[in-house]
Length: 309
Image 1: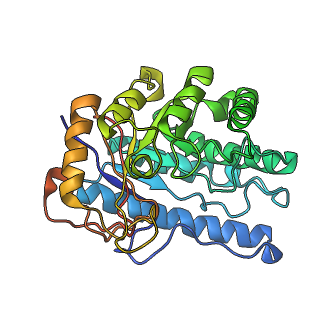
Image 2 (image 1 turned 180 degrees about the vertical axis):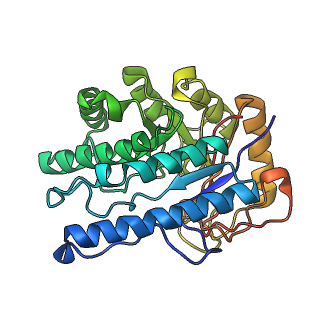
Image 3 (image 1 turned 90 degrees about the vertical axis):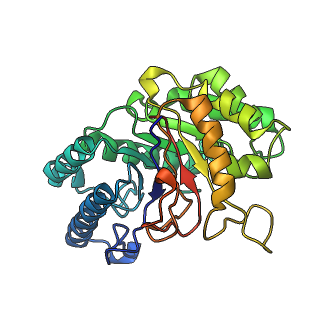
């Protein structure tokens, strides 16, 4: 089984960033157009670098369009860059690369504050629009967490389910829910899946920090079963504990031996395509997994993401 390995967002090897931004106080249409153009230039360079290195999985930064989901942005940036996004999507498809995005932690569909919910919905719509502009299939996903507990987990899951169901189809069809390291275990997320059908992205490290007692293999099996053909292939995140730091702190590099064991489990259960992605993994960490050859890529946090082959 071929396995796709990747990393998230930032490449340290090519000397540019696709996450350029500016202060809200400095917002102008000219500044927005200039920044998005530079970000897309760098994204293309990163994608071509990844393809040359044989990296088949990549998490695109959320910051391609600064303030794109903010009410201040009334400029039609999507139409301005439609052709450029289409070309990037063609490159991705030609290279058979798997793509994802991970909206920031302030995206909370189950928040008790309606203003937070409204901004979260706008932010998710922006992310979905980016993937749609690239004309990527439904296998390109947005991974999100369930959110906060707010003193009542069943009620908080209920709010998530209600808001999820009210999302536009263009957003909802892109989502995948990830188990987190503090609030929602795989078992909790399986309940969300039961109520909504949303596929579950399994985070190995989060499970080790916050679980309901299942083995990694069993949790992976149960999460993989939530992915239907129309969702694309299952995704898995992998990372390691930073020695000497608080439990749950991501390490700069992964434990390659443990990753081999996790990959063996993924091969057994997934039988398709797995990609790896670090929380803020950068392209120069030791991305050994692909065939376990000497690394040419380095994610800063050792977190890997997966899908099936």
